[in-house]
Image 1 (cartoon, helix red, strand yellow):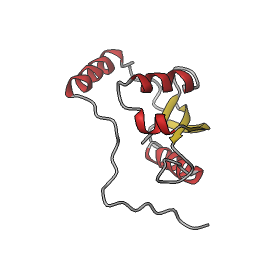
Image 2 (cartoon, one colour):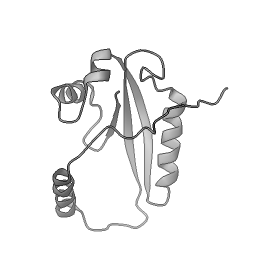
Image 3 (cartoon, helix red, strand yellow):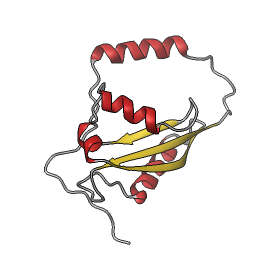
Length: 132
């Protein structure tokens, strides 16, 4: 199987831009919600749902191959192996929509609609969305 290599003139970065105020508010919330340490040998499995929003079935159009998703899961599990956390890929949803691929942005109505329609799992599940 050929190795997937993405070439770009620019380095890709996360498309989410969070204000310093929102980061500070989230940190305060996390600090006040933190539970006391429990059993140091305890483990937890977090279900992961990937939602791939693409304009078409090309890499440029946002199509993320399953091999890349599985590789990301391997990275998560490797990075967290000493913490007692394990990440379990439950499903991958593919959403072919040029409008959502190009139009979803943080704090936009499209972002809220996307998450209301496609969010999966219970409150402890991690939902990951990819958009343009």
